[in-house]
Image (cartoon, rainbow, N blue to C red; front, top):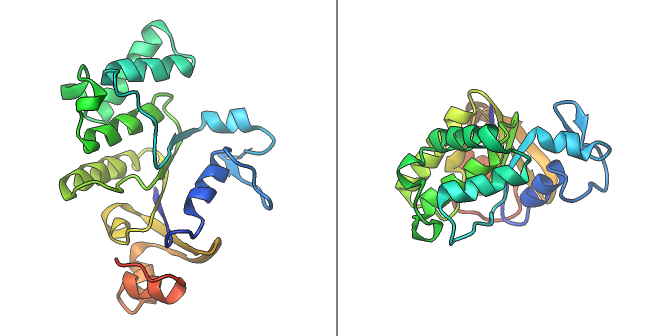
Length: 213
């Protein structure tokens, strides 16, 4: 499934993502990934997760394929297994035409795809995406949304956003948080019904910040 994690700026979306991925500890409660507790078994849990942070690092002087080979090596891949993993994510993220191109020459859309590709190298069961369409133009957003929907057919995807249109465009289910608390959860249709047919109205009703849809 594709779960949208919605909330106004400052609601706690990125913090929650970092807790889920084990980058920062939770002060209360527990997080499990595929039944594995993140706090007590972080390495095993992280093997199940692919993570794309909001500002993912890229090495501008590398080619796309070179960067992905580098990331695969860090993850422990070598030889034929590394080549197979890199070829797989290049195909999955439609990077064939830019695979040998320097990253500093790529459009923002292709940079996003390259970042997503590195998160998929170890074929994780769960994919965590922090604001994956932020800053993209309409065509680039369309491409990334389609890729997310396709990946969601085989993986569990959780992505955070403050853009309400992402719910209908990509999600099978959504959660709305405000000030670190869950205030609504459901399918896009059920959430619209709660808001008298408008997700925007529900969002404004439940959150304390005015956010434009």
